Image 1 (cartoon, rainbow, N blue to C red):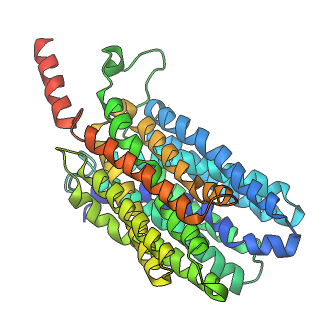
Image 2 (spheres, rainbow, N blue to C red; image 1 turned 90 degrees about the vertical axis):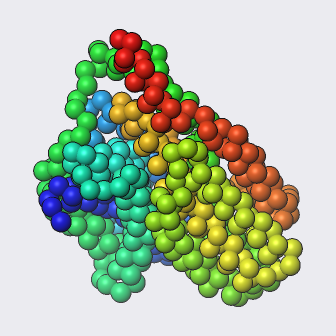
Length: 410
């Protein structure tokens, strides 16, 4: 394999290490509660401040990388992830360092997902990679992002459970692994030259933004189901399946493993489902999520834990299909000047899905779980209808023909 074909890998590993750093906190929550007596409100607030850093970084980081370049934004994201780990090593001094660390981790994650995802896509095509097939960038970025989110809590939990210094060692290992990665990333080529903020992009000046129109009509309605599918699979299902009793903890562990495992395993299939003639990959993804919700309804009506785990597998598959499918749609239809921004918007909408367990728990104080899932299912049907109706609008190949005609008249 030539050196050129490998240039996407360090950029993708940046996504993995930032995701690792963001999620290792989850495996240490029990330690923080037991060793420091942190209340549930304080722990929830630490999760919330992560989002406070994540969303602005997603919305602004992609636009920044469109103007200033992918490499600098990615290096900054990895550096912030290391700073987050360093801050959270100070938990022995109280909660304040954890709040700082979580805010930095959220900022790093948002910046990496917007900028590094775009960088991986660009490094996976000519002239940096002349052998990869169309859609490789989306698949690579999604797979490494998912891998990082999975590795963080797994490695962090193993280190915390079996090694000395459980509040320090997991973060130290993460920082040590990031150092050589930064050295390699710094030598990668920049794919997006710096743009002057005073000079508008040619496409913007011409008043053409069809890629954005397809994004809002096709990608945006499907995006919230990316993480809604995952969180329902591993957080809601163990809570709503009746009759588990003392087995609920073990059942929840199995649901997490099945949901996340299916999400990763299904992703290579997503690229094969993709089509330049329609939004087939997104339609399939939302359809799979809908099937998972219907299975969950049956598992609740006829209390069946095994069927609940099957529903978790289907929902996890929907998560993986939608993550890859959404990135494929964006990377195919977005022009270079808007790739980072639209990637950031996609992940921002996807993170809305993380609210699903919170909403379900809140509404569950007054409404039976069956009706909550039924309501979510109706919303999924509505999203699927919107994607299907707009599936063939503003297709990338049609946009290229419009641009070619405009160029011939110029």
